[in-house]
Length: 243
Image 1 (cartoon, one colour):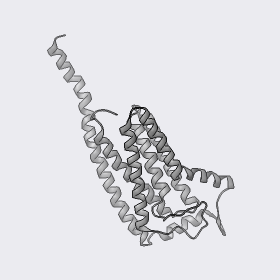
Image 2: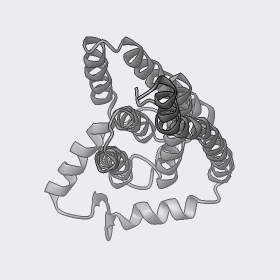
Image 3: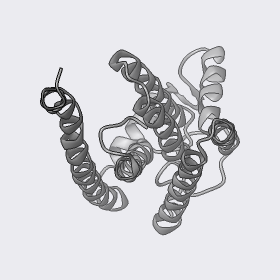
Image 4: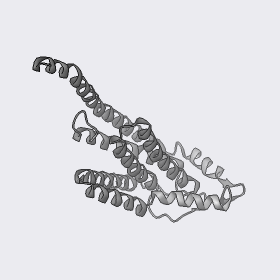
């Protein structure tokens, strides 16, 4: 085969394999920015409605529905289920999430990926700070119509457990899915991370330590922050690769 024919062959095969992912790569950041912007706008409108008390009746109805009739101190369901919910809510605690980030960061560092480790630490830290600022800004009191099923001390809106667990688990799922070639495996990884985030949020409602609207806000803030981080990650990634 001559050099000219080889060049034509490369141009006809290899170029298409690189240019197509590159074009998709350029579209993904735009989609991420648009989605993050829409999520932020929706959160602002939603937060305004919550703080104006427009959804308070729904909040109260849901919390009361999760309590034994005539006894607001007891959640519905057997005792073992209540203990299981406490175990689930611990997955969103500061200690568990911090340990998860430390373990994964150390692994990435040992695996000669210090940039990924730094990216994970910075993204999670800034996301947690954002949630704390929102809590201070809105300063919504915790639910007082039912007994709290676990100790709480900070403001209520948005839910810190929900926001931070959404950020951490979706960030880990996003980073793992980016380097995985198999789409079923990608779906499984991200599905597990989403499921954990959802369960942590629901556990906060069941235990009576957050209004349902606090948890919805936590999911929205966490998801929006992960979209922003996804945009940054895509801009840092070489076009046409999964690195």
